[in-house]
Length: 351
Image (tube, rainbow, N blue to C red; front, side, top):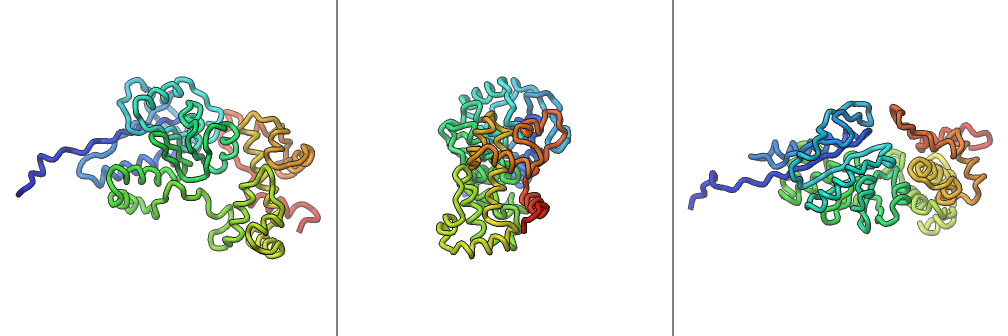
């Protein structure tokens, strides 16, 4: 029996809408749309279409300073299978009621809604993440968790709960798109797209966002990485060095020696860095008082917090709330592990 290929039913075209807000990450937008473009390239007929829109005008400046021309005609957009909301630094304070109402309406109409990177703040403000698992870029996890206590915040690459999704941003957007394509067109096809993009392996939703914690993958010891994870998981009530050693089933001396060798500072010093980083984020992303932030970051006294913060960041905590004014051309992230190690070397009496 011969099959008439000309009579086969064409595959449905999946449509996506990308909503961008000022200072969005243009790399994430490009790589997510590129995944769909390559899918169309490999297919006999188009499989995906997309629109890029904004509720803030037709010319949107990305976080790298590039201006992107987009559509501002939200009312004329076709129905969409997926809606991705892209935001980066500054989006924690972004509040556009028209966009919020539009997202709720699209969710009721059956579209899958996804917050990407700090775009998760917008989806959360629309009430679409209440009671659901969600992720966000690791550097914003604590601030997001403090702002939305009805959301199950997790550190992973992306989450999919029914028709509500979140994505941590960066190249995790590629993994999310490939997994969505796998759902509709099979793992073989998504694998071919990954081959074209030289993106291997395709990571799962629950994969960790970080692997090196600021150190080289060639020199990072698993024991040290596990210690770092324990420290980061207990910011508000810091574990003592003996407690960490006991949980990892190693001697305190061995833990200290390995940490000093592979990280360049002591366990206590690294814990201080992570608590200061946590406080810095809460200062710029929440309305918590300085005292509340000190407590949430594991400091017993406000004076100890203020002294440590000023020593490392060069300004008082109260001054840091104005660190990223709206008209600042580009953000900075003082507080990396490398910066911290350099600061330690400059303090007299420190090894």
